[in-house]
Image (cartoon, rainbow, N blue to C red):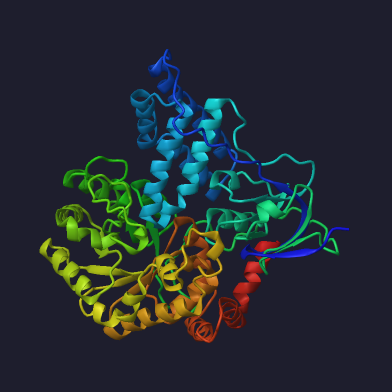
Length: 568
């Protein structure tokens, strides 16, 4: 008789069910380094094969996208776009033409460059690293005639077990077949977790070694609320019937964000491109709380000109006439592989020269960007604010505000994503017109836990008491100075935590576009007094679990709505 073993991970999607395990097939094997074409090969023809394989991969991804809706479709479209990325394909072709690498090796190396660049940029870009690896594997599989990465085939209900699950694969999950998802890596804010919640599929992530411990066919009991996976449970719990997810709110924001008793909470969107801005406007966003400008700088040998930046920024601003658009200046690190920035070869770029710090060595780059933002603002009806990333001191805030004023940008603020900035938020806001708390980076810096590393995912939780204390301090500083402090991290997507943030004094919440409708519905079902009491309760917890439980006692109606959504 097999021994019952309980494995612990991080809760990612609620629900409890059991079914036999089905392991994700092994990933594509890396082609041997230095593998080159035979001397008599047609090098140009070999390079052309990369384009043909890329086209086939894009066609398959778009075909998958046509069969799904919502977030899943968006992810598949985005993955297809990566498969057509000129920076990836041009680099791969050049490696064949110059170094005579076989196409599959050339694609592998080019993808590694793109992934490293995204990882160093952080934020949403870092979250796309798994997408790049997925595209790489798909193209390499096509080039070598191997099976394209996909979900395992099975006759009945299964629990999908994987080391990691690429977003494009997660987007094709069928909840009538895959009853739960368990991964060795990832976190509660990953695309896998988001999609699992949308599908009503229980999920537990960051379960160390689960992909090595569990074999195909092993019976698993998955508890997405407790974050546990029981291998060979004593009492088998029948697999739950297929569930149709009950939306927590409308697909789009139908009215301005406000609580049930009329307290205004503007709901803004996080965007990175003009296409994102169009999606945010269509979703009813009241403005843009975080416009990440890095996309304009990626895949280039030189920085974009002022004119190029003006055109891109204006395409975003024009979607929001009369509304606030907060433009964040370039947040790039020391190893972002942007040729026009100095690469110091830092061992720990997250703690090195990134964000505003790059302007010390490259002041012209920041001045050009501020000049471009000012020109774009002059030709737009949007209310343009600008903020600097990775501000850590009062002096940095003061100098940035003065620099913005020199370009005619009067509403200048800062990101609070470093604990030091949260602790001196009051003095910083004596100079900055506003602040935005980036809860993703603030959490990883506060807890010294890389947010992309599954082994420390338990620490990387915005419900951590230390993180909540810092957010509360920053919001209180804003209230005391009469300066708005908003939230632009993934934490605001959680309805319970969003209410806590409002109770702490958050002036606005900025989230991904498809979270706006559900978030608006949650706030509309809650009073400002509820939010205040939830914030006070959250600060009494000595652990994330205690904090969330304490808030749940105050906001029981939202927990009931979430349970109905998960178990509908």
